[in-house]
Length: 417
Length: 166
Image (cartoon, rainbow over all chains, first blue to last red; front, side):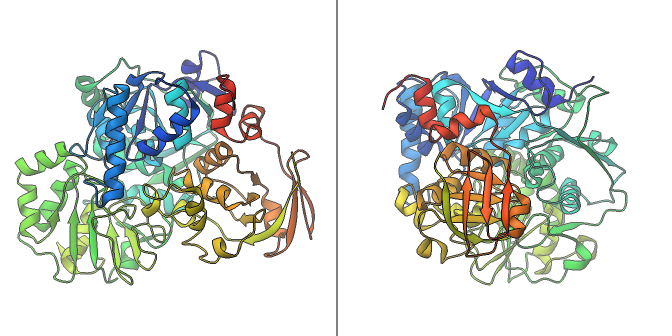
């Protein structure tokens, strides 16, 4: 009987034949942590092991509140820099590099067939290049520091097939919101998700990252996309380690299969306060907004900047709206600068900040006030997510965000542009 | 393992990690007592003030969805929550709870039957939950994971495994 990607990759790491449901203990290829590394380091020290199992295993990237908004965050960063120095961790990226998941892909740590864990739920992003990328807890990361090891249950796999060419301007974000809205926030709990189909095969790597990134919003352990030429062309020149493309067998067993045809898909919006509360734009347009957050590990890559700059060209952000822009990485920032996108965005009245997580989880840089609506290209809209329980967060694509910023309300880009 | 017995605090589906332990505290609030004071803050501000050690949180499907932040498990543990009973758990929360030594019980039928405020009893060894409506059975933890839970969490378990005493 054939095996799924998840069974094959975890079997290879465990050095034995495994099937879904088994629990294996493995040494991951890379282990990513961010601003939470200070807390992880303290837990590591509690274990009582003097040295890291392997300093090369760890990748540490500061992004969650960068630069530090207050003294407590500053101490946190300082402790991390000291820990990195003390243990000689070579793969450290300070606050000038970008959002961790974007950096993991740009820097060639996320690679086909590798197991890459991160103490952050959106580590599913690495599935976009065909890695087994999954989130773990802080204590688990501390134990990897001490022993190199982690236990993982071999997940069942849900296959999601996407077909059709979406209407112009309808993007990977709209497709993913539609999938989550239809299937539900717990549809893939404990499961691996495998995205396939002609629509995904035609997608850029940046767009595929949107799907894998948000796979966790339906509870998935990983959001795997089978590597192809698009993947290999991107990863080959930057690979930090040898890798092996692993595909599911043609006769692999899937727990569920869902097929979506996106030929007539409308732009989609996730409404407060759950990511699966998704409505087509026609039902939400007209909702007054106060802030637009264009950023996050979901949607702030170069192709998103191109779309937003084209929409804002020669137009103004509505006077009642603050538009906050955070490139996914310094590399994206520089490219967007060279291509003139940032100038267009600034001329439209938006505010461009450094590459970091921004207000996504309510730490700093744009917390909405009570009663305000924040329209975001990020991935979560839970009550209080952006730092204020009395604010509302809606999620949408970069194009919908730009059109709405101009209109001053949630808008269908086909009406505005 | 001792019997878990406590008053029920009942909530709905999709209780996410942001309402269990808000993101704005994740890098700045690390003291156990202070963490306990923020438990479930954005869902039920009265919970931390009024709950008693041993009380049991009961909720619908997908408890703990969202972030990987394990403080969402530790905050409840530090507050003295006896167990969380839910129709289902998000995978990261389930892992974090085991690693924190917080009992997590998946018992969908029991959740429907349990009334807010009643006192229920959980026998982890037998896999039994007793409430006013009757007795419900739930599957035990897999052996590979049970050891971590029995040791009191992942860190004590790892120390034991590495032969580090105390």
